[in-house]
Image (cartoon, rainbow, N blue to C red; front, side, top):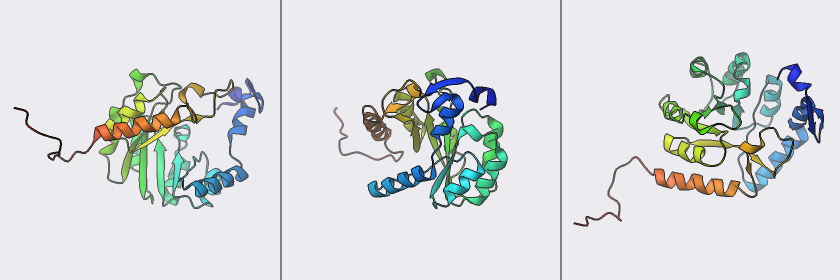
Length: 226
């Protein structure tokens, strides 16, 4: 954010400016350790986004199997190149607010990653369905066997994420929230974790079943009726 944006009045429980709000959203070391603790107890794989090299080095101490480079830092190519060279686990790259030059940059990086999850993303909140352009996911799947296509959803509801399965998405990112608040700046794109997220998962699983397999075979339920 530009400094003018950060100093704008913004009423939240954390202060009176947008800067106060954004700083409060950054995870502290104790919060990261708490997430690590609970995820291990619940057998949930977790990973974090890193927006600068200092944060990346702090996260690397945890020995994560995966790390995310969000759309927010797509202009910081020096940082991205350093992570690609340094990290030998799985990397997730979101491609919101970027163009062909960014794709070329990512695909031609010297790297040590084991897998690259390339997420199609439109960085508008919310994303209009006329702009989803899920055909990009099919294109991402054609790049390399080490590249796994995915979808970062900023559209409202379930449809974009369900249809992304048919386009080949193997990872889907969706914002969640704990109830509605007056201060969250992307609230309408997020699903309530207690009221909506469970149904979202069911819809994605249904899409996977409908999508099925590309292997052609005779099914037990098939029969000629004439």
